[in-house]
Length: 215
View 1 (cartoon, one colour):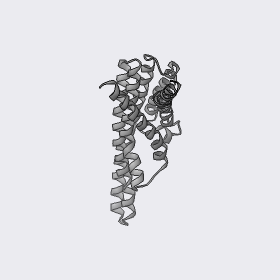
View 2 (cartoon, rainbow, N blue to C red):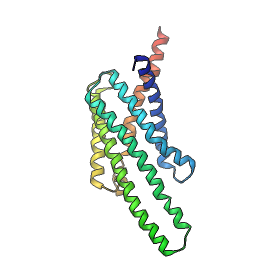
View 3 (cartoon, rainbow, N blue to C red):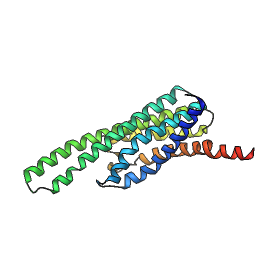
View 4 (tube, rainbow, N blue to C red):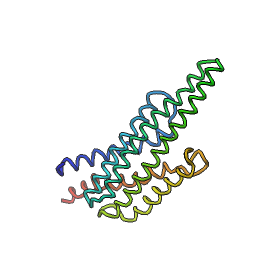
């Protein structure tokens, strides 16, 4: 990939990453089985992968490393895992609609047992997403120490959030930490990635524009 295409990929991924940052709070506060909630849930994972790829390319531009490759690898796997988790979750929760359509106790009991099994499956996928995104953040944090643009101090919160999220999910498995009266690491993941995207936004669009105007 030549420089022009690389710069385009960073810009495209950056815009996608910003879209992901907007979709995330909408997704966790929007519930139901309509087209809009479904669109939010199926778009989050793929857009997260593209945004993570932009972070990878940007770091590579200022100091490539093995940690950077691992950061993108685990983040991409996390994006795929969250897509599977959300679609399975949506399918499992649709059983509540089937429950309302019948008054047969035997059918209702069968639906309840199927829901319990399906719910454990989606909780396992949720745990998988949390493990992968924690590792992605951990390795991106390490990659920050091997490049020259992102402030090196970002390594500390990235490392703490990545390892903290991993520890909390292991502590409460298979129940998510937030459902076990502990801190939900999700918003902290979002904040860390958001900070990286804001710094990239300044470097790619604002700083470049100001440089051109000064000429």
